Each structure stands twice: as C-alpha cells, then as structure tokens.
Amino acid sequence: MKMALRTTVKTLLLIAGLATSTLIQAADAPDGKLVIYTSQAPEIAQQTVDAFKAAYPNIEVEWTRNGTTQLMNVLRTEMISGQVKPDVLLVADAINLGALKRGSSLSL
Image 1 (cartoon, one colour):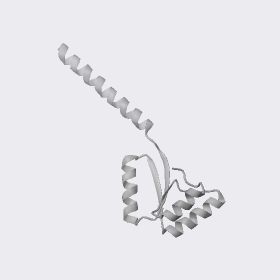
Image 2 (cartoon, rainbow, N blue to C red):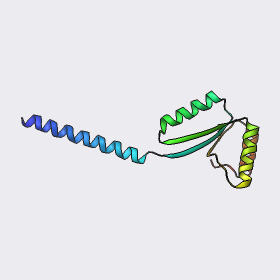
Image 3 (cartoon, rainbow, N blue to C red):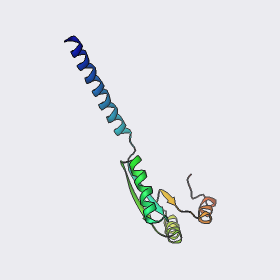
C-alpha cells in the first residue's frame, strides 16, 4: 500500500512538473508577426514559410512574392516613406543586396 502511494505521489509530481514545464515553454515561445518579401518561386516560398511555422508556431507569417525588380521598387518606395514593412528580404540578387548594404539599409 505504501509503495503504491509513493508511486502515485511520484507520478503526480512528475505530471505537475511536465505541465509546469510546458506552460513555461509556451509563455517563453516567441510570438508576433513576421513579414517576408521574397522572389522565390511560390512553392519554395511556401516551403520556407511552412518550415519556419513548424519551428515557431506562435508567429504569424505574412509573405509577398514578386520578381526582384518589383520587390526592390516597392521596398525603395517604403524606405523613402519611412514605412518599411518586411522584416525579411529573401532575394538572390547580389547587386541589389550590395546596394542596400552600402546604403546601411540592412540589419544582419
């Protein structure tokens, strides 16, 4: 009887510890919104977003996909107006990225 009581108490303590750990992790999980501008193909962009969401489920992801030239035009307009929307610029264009870097417009 004593052994069964000890086992029950240990089990309850373990469950309480796991529940507390889960609540702490949920409270510490990053949340908010991430805005991405990308020139990746739509299916690749969606895979990127899906992988991010799997790792950070509490973060809402909004992504815009267009050609690099169009994205850069939108971004430059936003920069001039002081209302830059994307948190991440995902393009494979060294010339435009280099120009942004020279202009101190990138946070790495």
